[in-house]
Length: 122
Image 1 (spheres, rainbow, N blue to C red):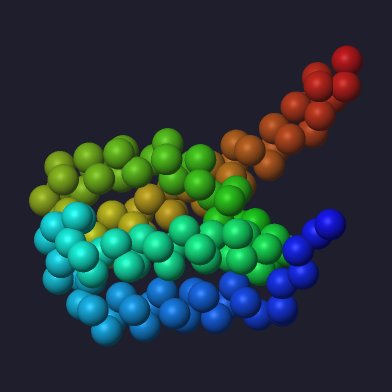
Image 2 (image 1 turned 45 degrees about the horizontal axis):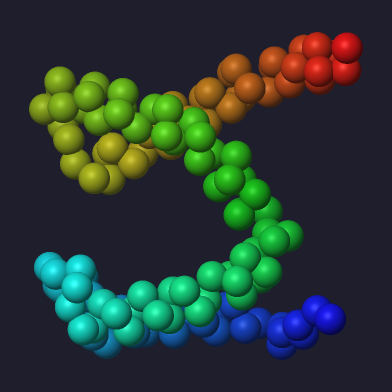
């Protein structure tokens, strides 16, 4: 029998995570085994199923899922290029990585998709 979860539960738990993080200053906690972190871990574990259910049909979630592997492939390259140019900052590394990841999707993945489907259908 499926469990019926009220609509919006995932969003509420997400908000609880954010509020908990700010309230207990988790950004300033340097130890991952701190008591405050265990409360955060517990809320994260409880929220995961609801977050998955809430974002199942989300276009943003789908787009981030499609970007995840190109991000994995390009992040080291982007950071290396920025380090060589003495311009390594978090925001520039994220922007550079996203730029290369989106370029991979539109210049490589999308054009090759029909070929992949054709070969896969053999």
